[in-house]
Amino acid sequence: MTTHILGVSAYYHDSAACLLRDGEIIAAAQEERFTRKKFDARFPTQAIRYCLHEAGISLADLKYFIFYDKPLIKFERLLETYVAFSPKGVKSFLAAMPVWLKEKLVMKSVLQNELVSLDGVQKSNLPPILFGEHHESHAASAFYPSPFKSAVVLCMDGVGEWATTSAWLGNDNSLTPLWEINFPHSLGLLYSAFTYYTGFKVNSGEYKVMGLAPYGKPKYVQAIYDNLIDLKDDGTFRLKIDYFNYCTGLTMTNGKFDALFGGPPRKPETWLTQRDMDLARSIQEVTEEIMLRLARTLHRETGAENLCLAGGVALNCVGNGRILRDGPYKGLWIQPSAGDAGGAVGAALTAWYKLENKERTADGTRDSMQASLLGPSYTNEEIEAFLEEKEARYVRLKDEVLFDRLAEELASGKIVGWLQGRMEFGPRALGARSILGDARNPKMQSVMNLKIKYRESFRPFAPSILRERVSDYFEMDTNSPYMLLVAPVVEKRRTQLTEEQKALWGIDLLNVPKSDIPAATHVDYSARVQTVHSESNPRYYRLLKAFEAKTGYPVLVNTSFNVRNEPIVCSPEDAYRCFMRTAIDILVLENCVLYKADQKPLEGDTNWQQEFEMD
Ligand SMILES: [Fe+2]
Image 1: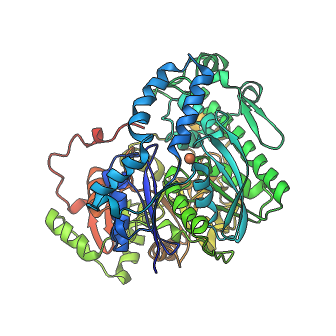
Image 2 (image 1 turned 90 degrees about the horizontal axis):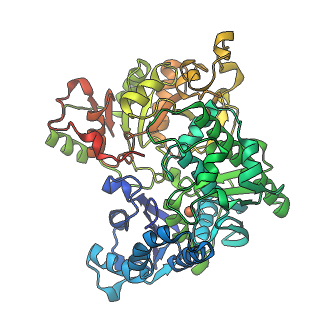
Image 3 (image 1 turned 120 degrees about the vertical axis):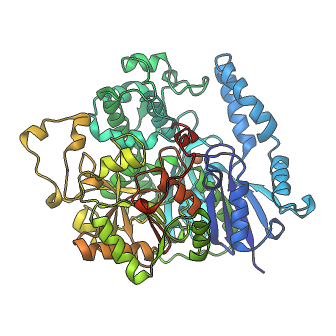
């Protein structure tokens, strides 16, 4: 008999659902893509509906519904933290309580009610509702889909129930806990404290801190070690909690933290100063050091050849790149949806392997995340029906024409919105919902940042490259299909700077082209690389091949198909709207191609930028 298991993460950040059929991931999606509300944490009604639809089943067909963590233990942590710091945290405790008492403590019946209203199923027909553990869900999401038969697993995030860092040993279908570091000592929260202090939004602005770091100097590294963290040689650590406010307050840092770094936090949306860049660089260096030490320790302790990573900190692709280059492992695999959304995958896989005790096979090379292309897709017929209804002007091109035509347009500087196949699961666009441009074009970075994404000009873009050509461009020769590894651009492609340019520092560096692919090279000559593989991403691969044939360059700039603060587009309608609102020149929906110059402007669509909250 076929076994279906649904994993869900919700109520904290970026809720999601994942459906397994006999252990295989049939579908996975984040709720934000459907509701169009970034990091939507509500119960993922639409994501669940989508997953069930993809499998052609109803809730009553599920063997288990498994939630990714244990709300009662989280509550115990809040309560104990409150008691430990009492009466200091009374304000934040009271602020958190109504949600906890109303929703999280009675989670089982909340979930049951949500499910009943979702597809009208009788309560008595609902599947059993199970609760996983937060870090076990992360660990499972990292190990089970990995290509490895055995591996050590490192999870690092802000906090789940109690654990903030945990180590596991994965072997066949078992996952054994090794050790953990508990709240309030947290690498994720330390990084978030600096995210907050440099004026970005916690839980989403961490990427910006990482992107800003190369503009700064590591001026504050010693101050961090001397005051904020007691870091041991083995990578384990304790934070000095009196500099932070997250145990008791509604902010991340406090006056003592301000005094240490010479002033209050930067106000969001104000000018970035050199201090912010230096702080970003400093916390980035400390984070990399901790990641590397922990990775080395686990190798020493277990002798494992392979390492798997998950938890929000594993989205720090600069740190991941350091582990790859300087660490002791033969194999490294990172769950592409490393944050809490990926907990839905881990929870479902835990039910399959741990509860059902099913056999697991791993061939050492191929993972089972299917390039993370696990979301909805749309046929050309559905797309044409939509475009007709919108009275949009388009042409439907055959594949033999499509790829060559697009390669030519891209090479001439055009920017292409690209929707193909199933939507990505996780925070990165991987060539299914992407905005693409020519990486050789020195103006591409500023045009894409300012006219398309409407976001900060310092933010770098990532290259997609044919897997077989990656080492011609970057100092790496490994698979990186999920864009989670940063590597330096090879020496021979770097631009020789003039003496004058060498003297530049900070944001002034931005306008100096760094290589022959300047739009995808960060100021420190690094790049967040996506390798594109013919088997797992065939249409995107074909486009890169066509671009290579035309220009000699197997590289494109790939950024997510959205504007700042908008969730990545899901449907042709989302893509069309984003195309019409921005300076994207050409929209490609499967085989249907739209040129901006041919379209009538959208009527009454003037205030759209207010739709999306600032991040
Ligand atoms: Fe987490």
